[in-house]
Image (spheres, rainbow, N blue to C red):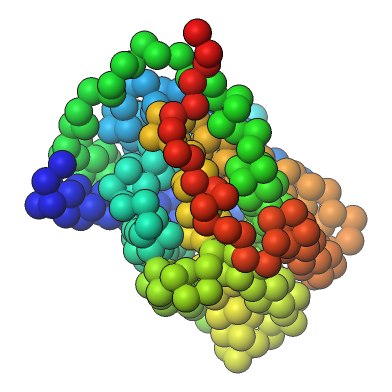
Length: 396
């Protein structure tokens, strides 16, 4: 690929990521309120919100193999188009049972899109700059998560939920349009050569970051499922400002991710980010106004923004070109499972103890993830230990 084609694809992928996650983030603060307004209980909120990740999770193995064998771009387009197709169903079917089915199918679209787009980002990046590229490209989704909640709340309050879901569908379609213009990659050499995916996945350099991500997203999913309800009750202004501050802090640290990775290594960004994230989460139940909201949101965003590109970079370097789709599929499956379990378990905890108690308990989980990472990979994992010198294939 020529440098000009690479730059063009980076811009197109930036736009496709931004518009897709704008559609997703518009529902982040509004869907729990939508379910509540339909008469749903806290358990219903947790189930409908968390079941989204079940749809993502169940198709991850298929998505990983399809990304490696069918190509990144077709799977990306499938994901964005499937997400867009769900918009009218959110409007027309409001029973909790229907919403559960809709969320599962919507999750399948997210699985296809994220599996393909994450692999594309690492394909476009030079090996020594993968954490940097992941940090830069992820700013598109962070910008989306900064603007999406505010936009979603405004549309829902001013125009109603049907307008909200219509806007969600249009942004997903825009993502498909941008993705369709990405360059077609050259055909894979020896596409019929069998690949030992199991050997690629069970490496310690893949498994440890995967389990770490599972623990972090377990806390993340549980917190974000009920955080909108807490913020709406505590704050006299548009609580979308929390998500704006969170995203702004995450954006700034991601822009600096490349320099930080070269200076400190990915390891300190992982465990340091998780420690900061834990403090931000512990402050969530203490939010009563603008000052406490900003303190929690900024620490929350800085911590997760440092952790995510670094742990993704470690996994990218631990996979070869022919196994990267499947490796990322398993890795992102941990994200899906954590979000799903977080939402489902959080609903049960909130029903019995309340939202503040849930958040205090979840703040311990990132610290456990950081301890696991350091105990198994060390304070500063050696990048050469993660590198894959050749394709992993099944012996003939």
